[in-house]
Length: 288
Image 1 (tube, rainbow, N blue to C red):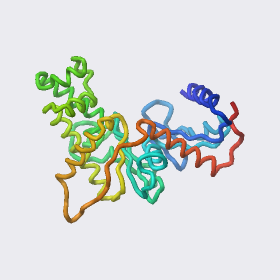
Image 2 (cartoon, rainbow, N blue to C red):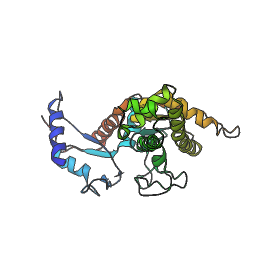
Image 3 (spheres, helix red, strand yellow):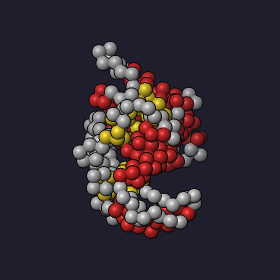
Image 4 (tube, helix red, strand yellow):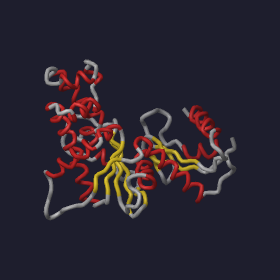
């Protein structure tokens, strides 16, 4: 994987109109930012790997690495939907749920580089084991794209007739059912899809309300594959939140869609590269 990364990076550098001065990496897993080491255990060999140091040695330029959710938050704050706000939360709603927090205009990583793990808030007792290893009803296990897909597949097996529209969108194959078909059918007005979608969104809204109560951010920015449901997703979340509205604790936090789409983390990686170039002495520019 490192060899391929080096090859791809060289190909990109070859397309650059000038020499590369610094590097930023958005990594799809946990990162110890202070030590600049990957802590992901999803793939063998990456645990405690010094990815930033490796990139510096291979490319000869300063490098910074962070997890993709933090990079997404940084990207949207610097270049997207969060421009100009002092505080925001970015959520990537995909197969999992990741999030990053901006406070006072800066990315907040926390003591252990684990701040903002909204996807792993335990919301209820559950038999579903989350990717984090807990059987505690984490947000990710209840409201991620993977969770939505699993839920609609299980429902379709038991109630194929009521799942007719979703199955039609999936080409008639239950294994092909995912959050995409669920959201599309719900937007079309399919009663079953609306009910299943609302159930998942309610768990997501509960987690967001916890975040709002704790941080009172200016904005919550939604990115990732599930966010392709667009305004329908935003409206569904707002409707769920209305059920917990408290006149004693009102809030004005905006819930909006990411402006940079799937590229939010890459824009964040670019922001990391800019910071690395300003604060670290580079060894040599990486020439084409």
